[in-house]
Structures are given as C-alpha cells and as structure tokens.
Amino acid sequence: PRARARDDEEPLDSATRASAVLAPPPPALPPAPPAAPARAEVPAQLAQELLEKAAFWGDGERGVARLRFSARARGPFAGATVTLEHDGERTHLRVEDCDDPALIERLREQLARKGVVLSEP
Image (cartoon, rainbow, N blue to C red; front, top):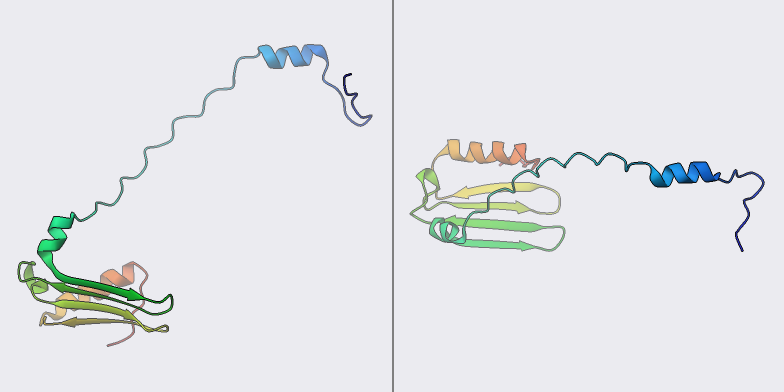
C-alpha cells in the first residue's frame, strides 16, 4: 500500500512529478580550476650532493633540525652547518662555519615569512 502524506504535507500531483522526471538535467558545474602545481621536491641526488649530513629529532614539544652542507654547496653554504632548535618555548637558529652575516639574516627573514618566530641570538 502507498503511504499517505501527513496533513501538513502536500503530496506532489502527477503533473509536478512528471515535469520533474521529464525536465532536462540541471546544467553541469563548470570544471574545477586546475590544482596548483605541487611544490617541486628536491631530487634525492641533488640533496645528496649538497648535504653531508641531515639530522632531525623531535618529541612532540621539542625538536631539532641540523643540516651540514658539503663543500660542493654554493656560496656561503659550502661547509656550513645550520641548526634550527625549538626547546618547547623558543626557536633558535644557529649557523656554524659560516662568516657571512648576510646569509644568517636571509635565513632569519625566510623563516619569519614562513611564520617561524626566532628568539634573539
């Protein structure tokens, strides 16, 4: 048996149902814009050529990233060690074996643009 509509609902008459079934489909949505290209990953071979060592550690509150650049790295990065450390409260940047203050300032500026707030050296 067919279910009867409640008193507060109006059942669709046959003409309304027929027009819904026979009506053309709604227009298709425009195609989605192409996704932004994924950030290019540094090929492993290039990273191996530029870095002598890379070490990362973290426990959910504190963390350290340490990158030792090889002599084949460009400019003031050659032979430098960059350490970024978060002690649970503050983030510190340390650059060793590099006497170029402009490099350190550029690193600080790039990290600030990414939202990393560094404590003063």
